[in-house]
Amino acid sequence: MMITDNDMIYLRRCIELATKALEAGDAPFGSVLVDGDGTILCEDRNRANTVDATYHPEIAVAKWAAQNMTPEARAKAVVYTSGEHCAMCSAAHAWAGLGRIVYISSSRQLS
Image (cartoon, rainbow, N blue to C red; front, side, top):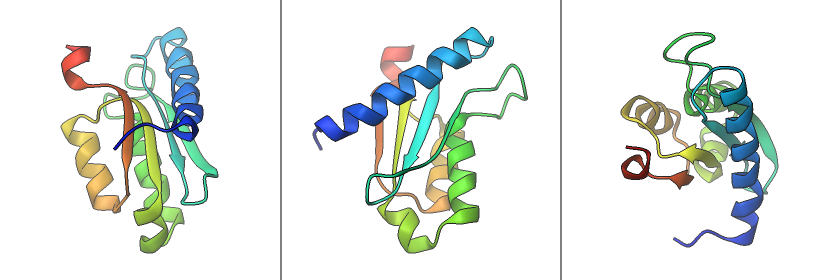
Protein backbone atom coordinates (compact mmCIF):
# COMPACT_ATOMS: atom_id res chain seq x y z
CA MET A 1 0.00 0.00 0.00
CA MET A 2 1.28 3.47 -0.85
CA ILE A 3 1.92 6.13 1.77
CA THR A 4 -0.63 8.92 1.42
CA ASP A 5 -0.41 12.65 2.13
CA ASN A 6 -2.46 12.02 5.29
CA ASP A 7 0.02 9.33 6.36
CA MET A 8 2.81 11.89 6.05
CA ILE A 9 1.19 14.10 8.69
CA TYR A 10 1.41 11.31 11.27
CA LEU A 11 4.85 10.17 10.14
CA ARG A 12 6.18 13.70 10.68
CA ARG A 13 4.83 13.54 14.23
CA CYS A 14 6.71 10.24 14.67
CA ILE A 15 9.91 12.03 13.69
CA GLU A 16 9.22 14.77 16.25
CA LEU A 17 8.73 12.12 18.94
CA ALA A 18 11.85 10.24 17.83
CA THR A 19 13.84 13.49 18.09
CA LYS A 20 12.59 13.98 21.66
CA ALA A 21 13.62 10.42 22.49
CA LEU A 22 17.11 10.99 21.12
CA GLU A 23 17.44 14.27 23.02
CA ALA A 24 16.49 12.42 26.24
CA GLY A 25 19.14 9.72 25.71
CA ASP A 26 16.95 7.05 24.15
CA ALA A 27 17.05 5.51 20.69
CA PRO A 28 15.17 7.67 18.17
CA PHE A 29 11.80 6.01 17.86
CA GLY A 30 8.32 7.53 18.05
CA SER A 31 4.85 6.11 17.43
CA VAL A 32 1.36 7.47 16.92
CA LEU A 33 -1.95 5.57 17.16
CA VAL A 34 -4.71 6.95 14.92
CA ASP A 35 -8.32 5.79 14.85
CA GLY A 36 -10.26 4.93 11.73
CA ASP A 37 -11.41 8.55 11.40
CA GLY A 38 -7.88 9.98 11.54
CA THR A 39 -7.90 11.19 15.15
CA ILE A 40 -4.68 10.77 17.12
CA LEU A 41 -5.55 8.71 20.19
CA CYS A 42 -2.17 7.99 21.73
CA GLU A 43 1.47 8.73 21.01
CA ASP A 44 4.75 7.99 22.72
CA ARG A 45 8.49 7.90 22.23
CA ASN A 46 11.17 5.37 23.03
CA ARG A 47 12.16 5.20 26.69
CA ALA A 48 14.28 2.02 26.59
CA ASN A 49 17.26 3.71 28.26
CA THR A 50 15.42 6.08 30.60
CA VAL A 51 12.61 3.77 31.83
CA ASP A 52 13.41 0.14 30.92
CA ALA A 53 14.67 -1.88 27.96
CA THR A 54 11.16 -3.00 26.98
CA TYR A 55 9.66 0.51 26.84
CA HIS A 56 9.21 0.80 23.11
CA PRO A 57 6.58 3.30 21.89
CA GLU A 58 4.94 0.67 19.68
CA ILE A 59 4.21 -1.42 22.78
CA ALA A 60 2.97 1.62 24.67
CA VAL A 61 0.39 2.46 22.00
CA ALA A 62 -0.64 -1.20 21.64
CA LYS A 63 -1.15 -1.45 25.40
CA TRP A 64 -3.16 1.79 25.42
CA ALA A 65 -5.32 0.49 22.56
CA ALA A 66 -5.97 -2.84 24.31
CA GLN A 67 -7.10 -1.01 27.44
CA ASN A 68 -9.14 1.76 25.83
CA MET A 69 -10.56 0.60 22.49
CA THR A 70 -13.01 -2.05 21.37
CA PRO A 71 -11.67 -4.89 19.22
CA GLU A 72 -13.51 -3.42 16.23
CA ALA A 73 -11.96 0.03 16.74
CA ARG A 74 -8.49 -1.47 17.16
CA ALA A 75 -8.83 -3.32 13.86
CA LYS A 76 -9.57 -0.03 12.08
CA ALA A 77 -6.75 1.86 13.79
CA VAL A 78 -3.38 2.64 12.22
CA VAL A 79 -0.03 2.65 14.00
CA TYR A 80 2.49 5.09 12.58
CA THR A 81 6.06 4.66 13.70
CA SER A 82 9.52 5.87 12.88
CA GLY A 83 10.95 2.35 12.52
CA GLU A 84 9.71 -1.06 11.49
CA HIS A 85 8.47 -3.09 14.46
CA CYS A 86 10.92 -5.39 16.22
CA ALA A 87 9.69 -8.89 17.10
CA MET A 88 8.51 -7.77 20.54
CA CYS A 89 6.54 -4.84 19.13
CA SER A 90 5.10 -6.95 16.30
CA ALA A 91 3.75 -9.41 18.86
CA ALA A 92 2.18 -6.62 20.94
CA HIS A 93 0.58 -5.16 17.80
CA ALA A 94 -0.86 -8.55 16.83
CA TRP A 95 -2.09 -9.42 20.33
CA ALA A 96 -3.83 -6.03 20.57
CA GLY A 97 -5.53 -6.68 17.22
CA LEU A 98 -4.40 -3.41 15.67
CA GLY A 99 -4.80 -2.65 11.99
CA ARG A 100 -2.33 -1.21 9.51
CA ILE A 101 1.29 -0.32 10.37
CA VAL A 102 3.03 2.52 8.53
CA TYR A 103 6.73 3.07 9.22
CA ILE A 104 9.48 5.32 7.96
CA SER A 105 12.60 3.14 8.20
CA SER A 106 12.77 -0.60 7.67
CA SER A 107 14.80 -2.94 9.87
CA ARG A 108 17.19 -3.37 6.98
CA GLN A 109 17.75 0.38 6.75
CA LEU A 110 18.32 0.62 10.50
CA SER A 111 20.99 -2.06 10.44
